[in-house]
Image (cartoon, rainbow, N blue to C red; front, side, top):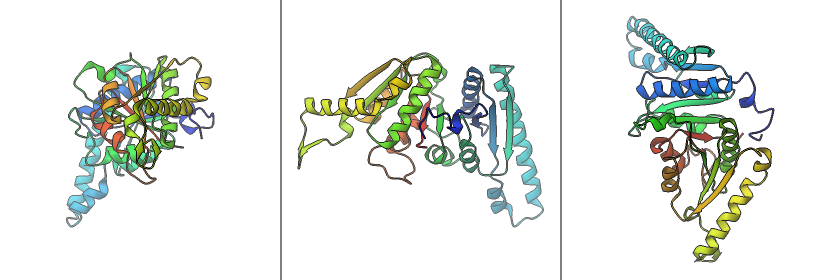
Length: 302
């Protein structure tokens, strides 16, 4: 299903912007980003918090009298966090429709399930790359979620919520990049901004023959062709989006990290070239969600 398909569940009017919280400052930032996005697009905001009560049951299960008290305490704390997050969202837009969900499920399980019908899912990550969500929740959701998952990082600067600059998409010739391109065009169109499609030629092995690498000029030509092929058709679907194509002989991670300094959103696929189905997350995407200088959208194949 293409990103522009009217049957895409993520584009239905009923699809909410979903944000997961855990009480950290990084998740507070994600709430503000998600509220701004929902308000601008006329969508409902759903704030969710997973308690992972099964883990508490495993820890305190031998103490039957303790378990109910622990669970009740976790529910009360969770309800307080959700109420606080809802207040923050209404500070962004008092008219915004905000719903909350407190679940006994593990946060990753909850968010992956909600992502199936969400417009997008937002999560927060700390400044130093420390994940806002306990353990591997953030990486589990970005790897296995549906549609678009956005990681909003606290970079310690105003750039974290910037609304200027282009949408930047990484293109590598993989099927995952096709999903990223569709999502990037849609985002640039919604934001009324330009799109920069970048390709790092050094990340790929173009061979002229056995053991022979193409000269730099031919490598760049091959990379330009790959970029043109993957962008074909999308510019016709989104004629209002101004597109710039960039090819560099550089490592993909270094290139995209540098471009994230001037972007308002960086879009990547869930798996890079050479990845395989079931792989948690492409190494470049994995690194970017922890170290980029702007929000990173991980787009999944439908």
